[in-house]
Image (tube, rainbow, N blue to C red; front, side):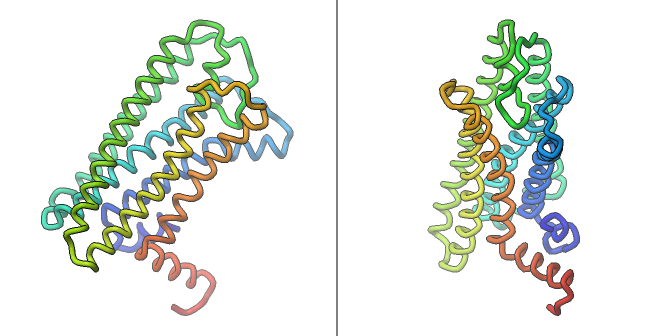
Length: 271
């Protein structure tokens, strides 16, 4: 519904709503990479997947996670420009600029994930049981017979460098936006801070679940039971992919009004 109203309503053809749509589409992509397979497995009682299918699923889930991180980073920068440079905003954040940023974001992350998948593909696997409801790179690496030092170095270095860089940009943009808001009138400041808090809330939920799911491998939490090892990524992924679209749909006034209007049309009620 968020994508539909943004696509059909011309007054929503603005960077903020376009980036929200990218988040939502990315969530759909992330969910589609493992929830249908999980549902089929639950209905059929199966719990197997081919190595090719496992690598494809790992690629999709990892791409979803990194595109989400980069989109939140770009959204923080977009809000900073909107509040800090309102007169230049339309010239700084044009449709061409949005397209270039989005393309660069996807190309960069696709290349990073492909390298990670190729490094995993060269491994020989001694085990076949993955303690997870979906395939991911770190789960596969834990089953490898041969040395995974290169994989660990690349994965750790790549993850830390990108996460730290994104967090620094986001924190800078958030702090600068708050400082600027304190100098604005009460009405303008309240509106800007409301939008900022929506981003902070959604991003915080994503970061907590992202770290929660990934650190269990990085920190070698090997003492937990298999059930807990499966439940942690399922709950974490489900929260991140479900709550964030709801936050933007409810807290963003323009989206909320258009969504309610379209729902009223669907059920046949007058505006």
